[in-house]
Structures are given as structure tokens and as C-alpha cells.
Length: 50
Image (tube, rainbow, N blue to C red; front, side):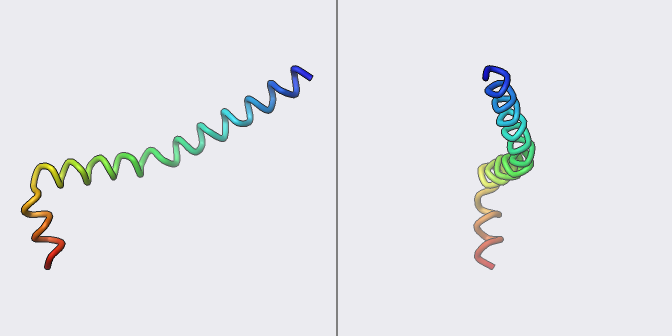
């Protein structure tokens, strides 16, 4: 029984690691977008309104 529980835990950890790796680029892109919006809000607004 403990072995079964351990393997299940390992599988869920592996899945979480895969999901985390998949979400990293998205989080990076969001952070960059926020930074660019903060650094140049006027340019950003002008770019979206055109």
C-alpha cells in the first residue's frame, strides 16, 4: 500500500512539474507585457487605439 501511494505521489508531482514548465513562458510573457505597459503607458494606449 505505501508503495502505491508513493508512486501516485510521484506521478502527481511529475504532472505538476510538466504543467509548471508549460506555464512558465506564459507567465514570462504576462510579466513582460505588464512591464511594457508600466514603462510606456502612453505608447501602449496609442498602439491599441489605432
